[in-house]
Length: 282
Image 1 (tube, helix red, strand yellow):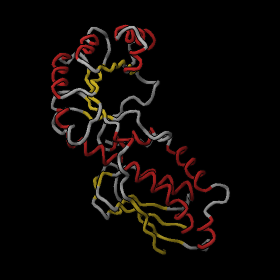
Image 2 (cartoon, rainbow, N blue to C red):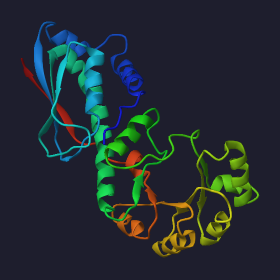
Image 3 (cartoon, rainbow, N blue to C red):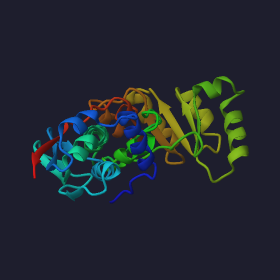
Image 4 (tube, rainbow, N blue to C red):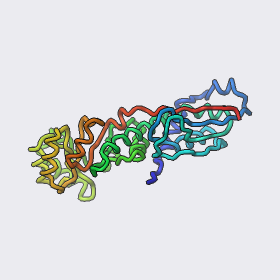
């Protein structure tokens, strides 16, 4: 499956280079590299993993210098070995060096998210459970990080506060009851928007089952509690498990029969993939 690069990518790239170049530009490359010098550049993955962001690298290079030419040698979603060249570029050496760091920062970050997601997806293979992201994303990079999750085989949760209702414990603390909170939410958004409610106990789940919530978020429950929760719901609502999920625990959670497991770690703590640009004179 192919995934479109988020439309916000161009703005993210523009802001990143404004931050990096300031008003003076790349003073190191300008002062040390002749204007007519040209090079070949290879974008290399130093450690094995699932990659995401090759189109972003191309956009970065074009942002700095549209005359740079590229050949994509691997596609987003590919799992590559250490040492793999994923993209080759040619153009003015100054331009390649100016573009390098922002391009690698984004590519390494997105590949790290995709690689982490792939590990979780592989861990639950065959269970029928999906791996989902959360809103625990880097400010300004949410669309790109969620793109990387999708590239890694995960599914995207709500994009923000605007496209689904998620009633959590703090909302419930300010409400009369679970039923009251869901009724008020449904009265505002109608029947077409997803309404999800977080429950911490099986008693809360029993209350939620009496409402028209679409999804119940089973938060920080034990395996035994999750198993019982899935039995109680019996397919009448979608079930999502969350809270402290790791690669060591995700398979057992999936085997309880929950529909989705959401993992904030994918976007707030996944390590960047080790990537580099190797340059040689043309």
